[in-house]
Length: 119
Length: 115
Image (cartoon, rainbow over all chains, first blue to last red; front, side, top):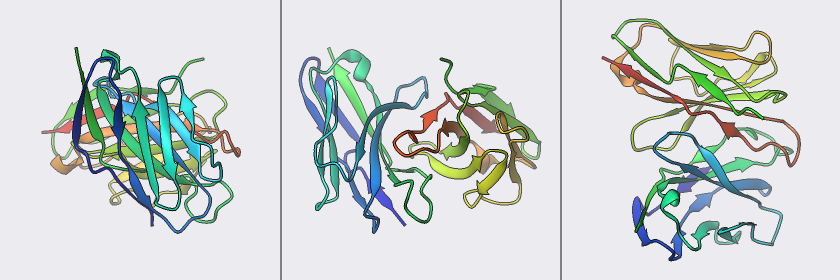
């Protein structure tokens, strides 16, 4: 079974600054995906970024980028130029690759990090 | 296009009552998932549909929980004899089941409160 650990229950950052959220995971799968989802108070779970484990290049989406360290099973999210609208819960999640055996459709989530961006 | 929608947004019920939660997935998505999110936790998997059939219902906590997807689109999560411990946000997600296109997109959830 997979586990996802987010060791920072809460973080805060000043507007326009950079912040990094941590995530580690444990799996025996060789092919998998990692995700960061954002959940604002509206409850809508919004995909922020996705990383395929077979890709060495770290994924980026505008102000969001990841530091994927496969050997260390670490997947951190960096938010640059933080904006007030980035205030939300951030969840790290794991899913086995479609071509893996077993539960290759089930997202396993961490407990989340509450990020507050201060003006 | 339209995203995943869920109704109702909030549901308050009394212990012992029956409730139905509805999910309308993104058009064309063949896979549909239900998750439950308790306060202060990440979502936990309940059930996965591929088309009309439940491919994996191992996450359903007990036999009071049941879900259907009769026409391969809209799904209903049904909870019988509700208990206070069932109070949570119930999230629905949908996706394609194609390599590289299997990202799950979530609805806004239904907050269920059992008094």
